[in-house]
Length: 73
Image 1 (tube, rainbow, N blue to C red):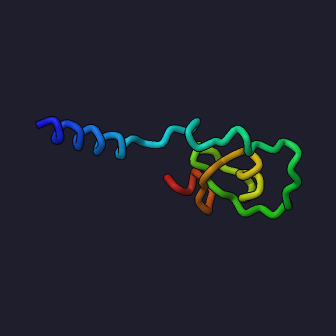
Image 2: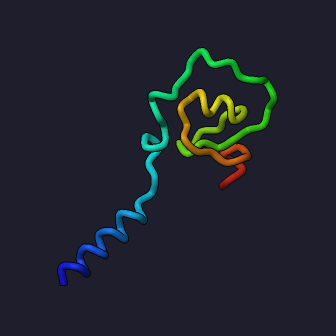
C-alpha cells in the first residue's frame, strides 16, 4: 500500500508543469552580452518571445523553441 502511494506521488510530481521562474537561471543572466541583430524569434520556457536565441540565453532562459510564443498557441 505504501509503495502505491509513493508511486502515485512520484507520478504527480513528474506531471507538474514547469513554472516560469523554474526555467530562468539567474547566474546566466548577462545584461551586457552582445547579440546579433538577426530577427529569428524564439519562445522561452517563461512564455516570453525573444528576438533570437542569443537574447534568450542572455536573459538566463534555460530552454526555448523556434518561433514567437503567440505562434505556439
